[in-house]
Length: 287
Image (cartoon, rainbow, N blue to C red; front, top):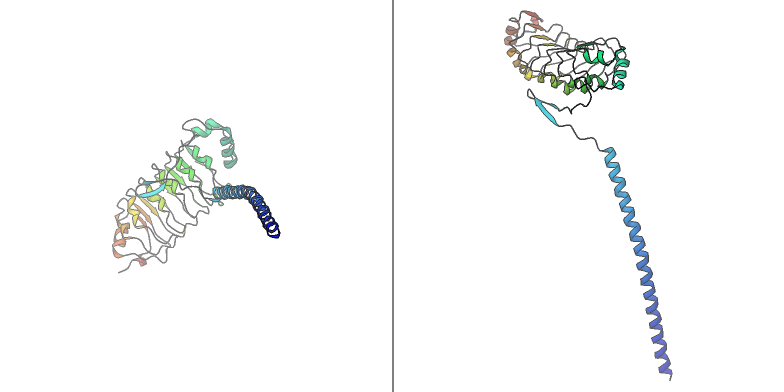
């Protein structure tokens, strides 16, 4: 009888243990199911947060590039609003009036061929200037606080004269390379230290005035501007000129004075002597 009860007691204990293990398993399944959902939600929220962070911190894609006269420049997207299509808003007119100091209406702005703005306190002309697509001459000289030019100037496809003298410019936007009609660009008395290579895209350029800056040399590609007739580089920090300088056969004016560190080859000096209007120190010529 003792053996019988012992066996029965052991069997009951195993059954109870089995029930306990089963209950524990059911509980674990429930807990893990909820935990798994929470972990999945956590990872989902984390992924969304990271995606949002990346979308806000990732820089915008670079614009497509086009090649103009051997130089790559950013392409310009189409304009929805400009004087050519007649779709110019009053908000644009208000910006232009405030910037320029002129009390003009839409008809006056959109019939204007020449715009002169000087002695104004602006640092950068407003991008709305690119909507004045009828302009052939833009003169922004004499604005001492001007530090930059908006890229929207590249929309002025009819522009022939661009004057940006007596400011604080150090460079030019590459979009100027779209101004295929530009004949005359004047950048005197700024703080330009490197030759603005964007002018190499201007195959029809005739007048280039860069005197009173801090330029040290010219690029060898200067020969890409075969129609260049006036080149003003006096009062810079020129050290030498590229060999291709002598290929500028259309020059009738070259100004190189007040560049005390300039050294010229004998061939370059011989070429300069053939230019009708010239200014340079003969001491710069090397034997």
